[in-house]
Image (cartoon, rainbow, N blue to C red):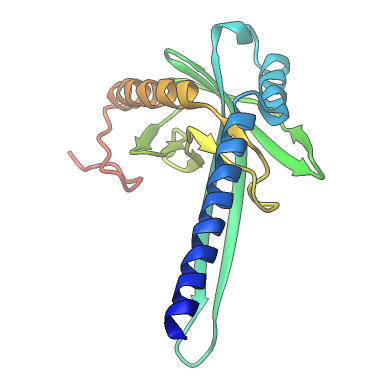
Length: 193
């Protein structure tokens, strides 16, 4: 009798795995030319001067803060940031995004160059600091963004843009940090020389 239940469990697990795999493949394919990807590109075209000379991408960041503990319960606060970005050698535009019921709104674009940045810290993500070394933005550009709950609002596949951004950010970080004679050790603090 037990063997029969084990076999049923394996069959149910296999069917669920196949269904989830098919859904993920469908979402990936759909994300290659999704409505959200078109909206991000439209936002960049409207917000960035000479946008055709830039590579555009979707970027996001999430942080979780834990408070409490000991005899009290642990509370978590998670914050999300979303951006459209446009980049080319020596220049990056960051455009804050917000989502409301499927509509994407955007804020004022910020142009970042070696002259107005104090330093960059990047290693799979990128953190940008002003001339006083105060954090401006942190985000990552992922090749695959699958729509989930309200905190994962887009279905965008952008492998080429993500690869281009990772090359760009290494060069841009070197340019900015060399210009300001700052060395960074992946913690947002300059290394004392």
